Image (cartoon, rainbow, N blue to C red; front, side):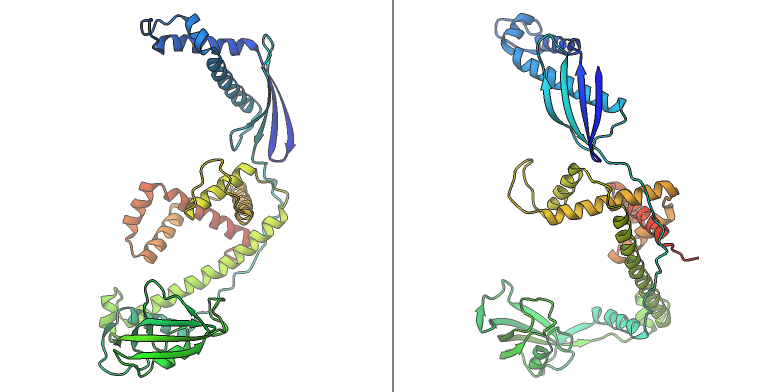
Length: 413
């Protein structure tokens, strides 16, 4: 078998393969023999169908199947001999199968181009924002609020109460809007995102029907509502008084802390960890930007982009049959795919060159942090991650972050 390899682009290789006719004949005869033993045809004993009968009835499909098997074998052998590692099945561009002549195949394969690393040490400073006492106090009060008891106030609503209300009418910009599927909502007076609504609810009682007119704040998160004049009619269903637990050592012991000082200290440490993480992520983002900019010539095979887009669409609940074109524009996802794949390949190449590997302690630290955030035990979560194979993802994430720390020069010397 003869193979000629040419490079059509950084991500494509063309194989021109010449296969001796004898190889096809051998596969063809083996398949005829196999089918003569397996086929069941009336008038012949099972396993004893004459080959000429098989050929008379099934020559063309057996020939097509034999040719497909031969081409698959030939492409695989050629890839192995020429150190080509395709990222997807190849595309047959041309096939010459003239009787009595060698079979000629022209196949186009996609490959990952080699990563030629350039500059990748940037010494980017990590500057976390200081954690103020007010931030610690806000978190403490947030914990108190989560554990607070609520009971009917039996009086007009005041600042700090929770009002349960039902939409009877919603008017935005002078136009009546349909009511939501679940029209009952709750708002803690003084903590809502619309100060005018908070103010209007002061003094309402259970059973009241209240007309409220206000304008959404200009900086309201929903841009479709920001700054618009609105009018609501609300049925007040209940006014609840919020009773915060006493903030003392006993309260903190019930939460697993030694005392109030230990609780504040731990909250301070968590906020500082969060501030450091945020600062590192800012530095990592800058490092990635510089890496991608400095390695703009690194190509990404189309097959990898297509697989990434397919995976992301499935994550979002879109399942399209293979090869079906729905006419949707996925250009944003394709750009995301190219960036993420280039990012992964660059970080992996740096990690290999610098022998960067996450320790078990690095992986355990990630699992422990996830366990704390989700309220699970460390051991139970680790066992679950091992069971479903996700612990490998945790290891890859730890390696990527350790590599990014190396790139930005963290910890600073």
